[in-house]
Length: 183
Image (cartoon, rainbow, N blue to C red):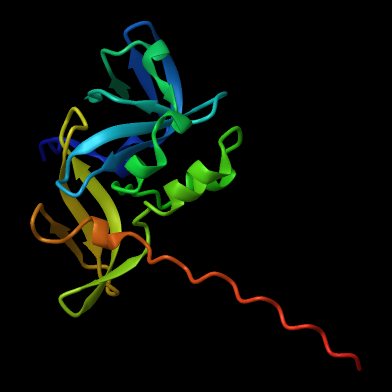
């Protein structure tokens, strides 16, 4: 079989990424997508540093990823305004941000709120996101692969589902604890 076109998100975990001025190992590469299925930024979880934001094209290059950007052009995650994150989704079934250090907790919470790695309902069925099929260059999402409760896969395309509607529902604030009763 010929290789698939584009980039599957599950296939870009634990990859070396080549910059114009060097090479690093990225544990996770997470595209962040808007309501129009455009990838606006990619978060790299690089070994030895807090997550970094890459705003530019990323291409598959054999077993590695490649960008024309310099490593110095990467930004810290806190450079992305929280209100911008509120308009995006990402898929992280590994919940990589749980173990992240060196990042303000408000950004971690905002990123958790964009993660679509949980079951959703569509046309009377329950689905769970399994993978993302992105364009080579990581500039647009071409398909969202989901599986039903019998592990049958279906690929949703732009216009099939509302990406922002897949975000987790806000949790109700915890109720104050009742005072303990004396025995």
